[in-house]
Image (cartoon, rainbow, N blue to C red):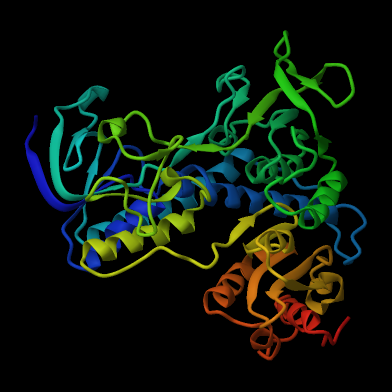
Length: 471
């Protein structure tokens, strides 16, 4: 043992939830130690949200230039572009480096003690941290004792037992740092991770096939939202194999064996296979079981204050299960930090927005019409198509719509959904209106700038009230 450290708050995991909790706790004067075994920023900054959006941008620009090399209706003509993949990946890595460096600077500025190493829980007040020493050898463990322990270990990709990661079978982490592009990529899973990366690779010129066991893509979203995305994928030339089971790699390794509906087993040719069937809480490998916490499968069970079943032990983010979203973890991190500092807080958001950065984008907050009906609510809805929005026309992005869901009796807004180019930026307005208890009239009578796509938000509220102007 190389000595010990005593602190008020010990945070295991330096992802979005962990580092935000550390900064907020330090702002409130709480002595804080943050332990991270890999890189600050967690999955989101290093191998998830940020790098994927960077590559999405590269792919969009490359695809647009390819269109301009043909017969563009905008009157722009250029030569066929070339992709320097190594430079694109380096640009992506540069953004990641700047952001993770910024997190490190913020933690230092707030006097958070950051320990680089792998934590192993001894008990609810004690953790041993092993750091990598010289020549890659583990050094002597450092013991940390705390009054409060915050578990923020995140999640990891789910592997298929009959097709584990390795060789031609890659995870989203591998797909975000390609050294070269395959000629053909098979993607197992049509959730947001698989489709976001599928669109990137297809726009880079790769032949892409997506295999999904359910009867439609993005099964977590309602069917109407998914239709424009499905149409866009088909237009891009992405092969969609729905209601199809994956049986394993082909015998020669040159693809995967699939079982289409009402058809014989066949081989889908592919140079690489991206398995994107979801993520699971990272709850093993650091001694969590020694605490004997109440669990929901692999997820740690928490209450509305992010407390676990053990006094003084808290948990946030992906470790606590769905929805596995970085912004949820951040909000929970702040919630815990303020409670450790003696404030009264609860984590009871009215809505947590979710965004799928496909082409077109999808954003939701609150209840869909089907969810409202299932909850026994008498609801009304208003839908405004982007085809009737002037700004959307000038952006060549008229595929999609904005939809609002509200109670019929008092017009309280309970949900928003949108699909279209750039609609991810609607997330803030959607969540804020629900969190503040806005009614249809509040949104309908708020002056929205013209010409903007945001006018579709106002128009959807007007239409729900039967007062639509532009449709």
